[in-house]
Amino acid sequence: MIAQFALRLICGMSLAWCLMPRRHVTDGFFRIQMLIVLGLAVLAALVTSRLWGGAAQATIAGPLGPTVTAWSFVCLAGIAYLGSFVWALGRRSPGTVCIGLIAVLSSALLGFSSWSIGPAAEKYPGLAMATELSTSFLLGVSMVAMLLGHWYLTASGMPLAPLSRLTTLLGAATMIRLVLAAVGLALAGSLLRTGDQTVMMALRWLAGLVGPLMVVVMVWRILKYHNTQSATGVLYVGVMLTLIGELTATLLSRELCVPV
Image 1: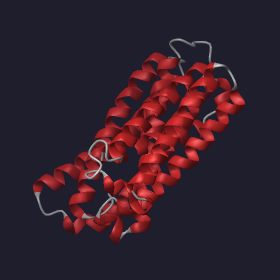
Image 2: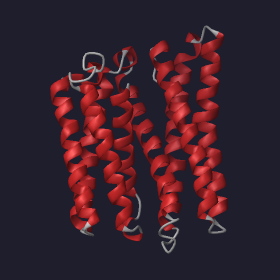
Image 3: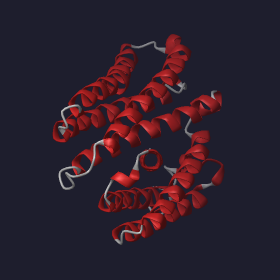
């Protein structure tokens, strides 16, 4: 579960980088982003390999196997390490190549891993893959938006276009996730037999879907006044709500054998 969560973040963050207007963001932001991916990739490689709990984490490997998956994480870490150097030197073209490589490799890994995340993937393989990708995108966009908001404290001269774009992407990611979660709820409705499962489903929807939508509306209204500090605080709440919602959805998916 640790490696899967790290992979979701890496994939979602890299997709957010690809879709945001990077030319308006200073190089230092992407250098720090690469270091975050480096840490997540190293953690996932250790967990996936047999050096640290490999047997317990072998399910993320899917058809690739734990060895290939672990080395794929090592490759991600290497690309991120190289990316941190080129962004520190202000070489934006090679840095953009590193972003693209991370996005392609992490998306492929996430697609393969979605085939073996549990009984839910065996029963609904297409829905499971779409759910993993949408979850990754939602987590990544919310995280990058919050971190970019913090970056305005040190680069206050940046235009608001990147943060506005990420806020729009957060709204789109939430709507996509909401549609897929509604499909999962329709499939799992009759399987909710205990009060605990009903409460968890309510938490999943209120915190993980309704909450981020409210955050998007609030951030949009705040950005009209060019108040990036307040917007960052609201985005921080959005990250917490998204994490709670998606972790709850993961637990429910394993219990109900339906991607929710």
